[in-house]
Image (cartoon, rainbow, N blue to C red):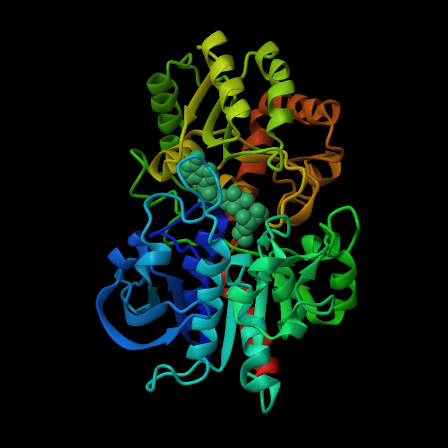
Length: 487
Ligand code: ADP
Ligand code: GLC
């Protein structure tokens, strides 16, 4: 099966969140299942820099009269000894040649022409499914998140919708980020008028890329079974729950996994000390090094709670701040790496200043430091308001850090709460709380301390977590079965 995967980011070349991790891991996992996968990406500087020996395969014109060149080459940073990832990249400097974040300028304002930048991505996919490259033609297009959500619409209207249609899978990584634009931009998209309707991409008078994906994809997936159910409710449906309920027969949740080539505590190139479930000495060393480096009290007996996250309300950061005294009063430590909302950044910086021996804050985005944090951490804190899947709780599990999470979305699907029963049957892997309220969060923190003081129980729970596979092979198998059924 010839599958074209379309996304705006891809690890390790360009990443703002978990989408990139998934887009980077999936092609090889699918190739291992026998799929002939290629990827399509916008020509951001970091993407073009990662493309080896690009050759021109063709070009197409945008509805607003700009020419887009399509080049093709290998991406060595994504491949391994047995697999090569071939990428198509859209070369359109006017659209993509901007430094930094792919979606917004230095002042964190979305680019005013984002609808054009990502409409081009959708049309690029449709062209590659209809012969733009004479040597390789996609049989199915799998696009991710709103940036790539126009692809299913472009495929659906190709040849005025006559003749057999190239099927599409659209994966929602986060329903809250929708790509909504003013209706006067519709003309730029090059889609026929009927698409601007309730059955198409019209969304409360505006145009929504997300809705285009949901309306026109042959099949919709999202990144955990629980989130697939939650988004069909008004509470989590972001105004699209009705549409999603209507498409329930073509909507499924496929749980993300962890890329072992990137997240393996026994071989991680970012770590000073390696470790695995049979020998945890390296983990203790990583913790001591981290405590010393950040000016925290160096003490193996003090539990180190950590956060590696975008600093937003979605991620439950207000809970972490208001429940901080629970950690402080019990003599624990908190380390936060992240950036995002300015107010949250300032609040964490202030706490670190006030409690330098117990709280550390590193502002910014730092891939290597993130690996070292999971390796040093005792508890990975992810108290999200909503969470489509969440990857950091799985990285925590693999690196021997017990996740403390809210029972929502993919967090509910990947962490088993510790209680007498789950301790007894050895299924416990972390701490799970229910309500998005500080009291519930605090109780989970207290339970983490209680377990920490029972070291043999703690070690047993930690071992259970470290042994969970979370491998991409089973997710890739689900996607492959889906592709087969659609082609
Ligand atoms: P989301 O995509 O919603 O932000 P995920 O848990 O799916 O959440 O993925 C987040 C990814 O981004 C993980 O790989 C995590 O390690 C990484 N990450 C988040 N914040 C930072 C940061 N400040 N520095 C380095 N990596 C980060
Ligand atoms: C999104 C979600 C996150 C998920 C990631 C990868 O960014 O917020 O929960 O893990 O996509 O699918």
